[in-house]
Image (cartoon, rainbow, N blue to C red; front, side):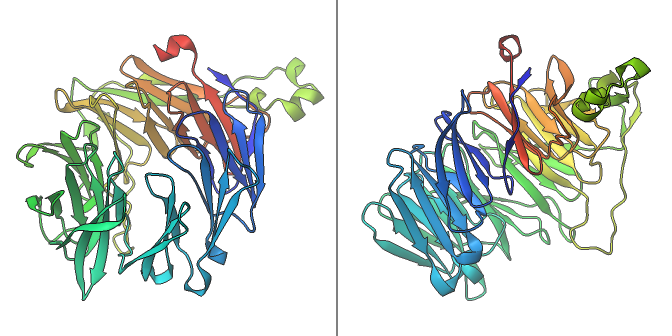
Amino acid sequence: MNFSEVFKQSNQLCKVSPDGKYLATCVQYRLVVRDFNSLQIVHLYTCLDLVMHMEWSSDSLFILCAMYKRGLVQVWSLEQPDWHCKIDEGSIGLVSSRWSPDGRHVLNTTEFNLRVTIWSLCTKSVSYIKYPKACQKGMDFTADGRYMALAERRECKDYISVFVCDNWHLLRHFESETQDLAGLEWSPNGCVLAVWDNCLEYKILLYSLDGRLLSSYSAYEWSLGIKSVAWSPSSQFLAVGSYDEKVRILNHITWKKITEFEHPTTIINTKAVVLKEVEKRPVVGSEDLSIHQLTMDNSLFSTQSKYEITQLPAQVPVIKPDPDRANPKIGISALAISADNRYLATKNDNMPQSLWVWDMLRLGLLAVLEQTAPVRCFVWDPHRPRLALCTGNTKVYLWSPAGCVSVNVPVEGSFQVQSLFWHCSGSSLVLLSKEHICLCYMEAEEEK
């Protein structure tokens, strides 16, 4: 692995363009665009206020910067740096802003979710959609960009509208069989819309493009329900994580459960490998303690770590949640399926230091990574079965079926990795600390 120098960023606003050529970062009210390979600055834009959200258009030609406090959105062009667009929502306010799939329309959601405003960059026309629902994930586009599903709330009932993105005409409008809709997500092939209820009721609904209810699934009643949902890239499986510390896998033919994965406190499965991170602080001799090294070389005192295989049965560290507090730290809060549909990674909130990897071929536990600190973020390589994760310390971790590795980020000062994401080619990782970013390049041997 090789690492780049460190650059500044604010509010974790760092995005790689969809074509992989550029890296955009926000530093307070400035937008900095770099060439991804050379990291040289190619464009520098100044926004009117502190940027709260930043997003690339699908064709990598425009960048949207939203300033929610002022109800403003600014759009910048890479091809024509002198051209820019300013959208002011005025007194009605702004809580979210995003691109349409064609990269020529901006969708703004106003305060109190009164409406969604669709602004066209080409014709300067404006369209409005009333009653969008304020929920975890109330808007989603199909992967091909043809359709948009929007959750709505009117007359104390949940509705779903499906729009054609070419002209924003309403294709279907139907009532959802949910008490309080919490989110919706299209399958990767765009044929099925998954809709789930809030955590007070376990219910997930599968709708076709024309609004027909294909199936409804409920695992249990009278207890906290769904916490996370993830489609497999092939659309063949739907993984549903819940507060009962289980993941249920639904199949795409009957929409029935084919298996469920439990997260036990004691692992006795002989086919699973438990990899425990073990830290070792290097011994520093007096001859190493020069003034220059003390001030400049942070790696001199950095803790090294490696993974050791734990003998089974193995105990998994558990934190008991407070039953009197809302949103208890228990249950499956994060799910991710690898690009080849072979592996599923899960995180159970009351076992925050453990990451579970499941084999979707034999439907069983494959590995458990036991970290020294709570897992902050994990994400699969977009092309290979390779998982990257971070725990808020100075290391980045990689897991693959071949094994697991821990790597220190060798930069001056303390670079504590808060989150990370892959470049679209899978050749590098973008690491984010609280105020900085660093690029981690995979070597050719590691990519194979």
